[in-house]
Figure (cartoon, rainbow, N blue to C red):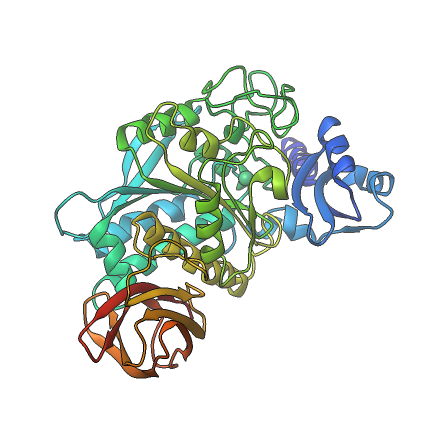
Length: 487
Ligand SMILES: [Zn+2]
């Protein structure tokens, strides 16, 4: 009898906690999204470009979708749920234990580059929140760059991207891609891969719908990405005052141990830049999020985002431009300069298949890692001031002989060089990699004088990387400019 009771309890328990489905609503307007936010719907993704929004509904309420949109589609079960066969771990995503083992073994295997994980504080349920520090043995000031994932516990795709990037940096440092050497020789990269350990662990046997932390004092957790101390609770659209809502902001700014731990660590660290990973939807977000205002560095963010998304073609902008306003969020606090010098903070929304849709598909996990890796690389290079991201028509005082621009930069297959010269001179171009080796040289031909342009098709044998192009004329004048090749 006891046994029967136990079995029944488990069946009831599993069916109660896992019965949610992601539903895609088509032809929804901004107005109807605001309306849904007001009513407390769990909006998981908005794609204005393609004209749809996804919401999470209890399975028995899926019919409600017909009231919200004429056309809707119930998305595959695994997009919104950790399937029972994967419920002990996270399928092909790294569960909490696999994360710990991965980061420890990375430190073991690359002890000259990676420190063993260090606890920076405790979660609500008193679990360790740990960070990993990575840099090369070179000395000098090496500004910190900060990467996080899983502040929202049902978004494991961002964690996969961090693991991939850490592997790429370490395995390419010595004799691989010169960009990895450049990043680790010139910065210190920090990872906080599991920012909400309680929620993530809870998801393993419980279907995977926990987004918030496990402080159930008032409801079912606090949204840790609405709990930061800049413009906290600015309005009730960008975060919710209701404890049962998925965007519940908590009783006060930094009320939660998880946000306090990150805040204190960041204040001590003073990173110059941060990437805070979320899923899903294929977007790159930057400040401000709390209101319809552009940041003082908006042009710079556009320049970075344009270069960072050259490979994955993610939609970029502020949250209010491409999603909806958000307040009490990590990026705004980091960028605001409130408690720590201004940090160039950005949030990628990885284009995963819903929250858990790649749990049985290593190829899809590989895809999201491959499409986010160039974004991480460009982000680090841009933070270190190395990429020289530039527009086509640069202005300002141009010297008599100058390489004014290389466009587009990053370059995918061919680039336009714009050169100002006195004219009637043969110009030759030499391309160097970051270690100063010549990888290519060619004659640009005779210039007419003034401003000339020529197109250079990047030879297929030149790998992805950062390069310096140097131009020379017959009189010995020269000029140079950096550019990045993406493959
Ligand atoms: Zn998120």
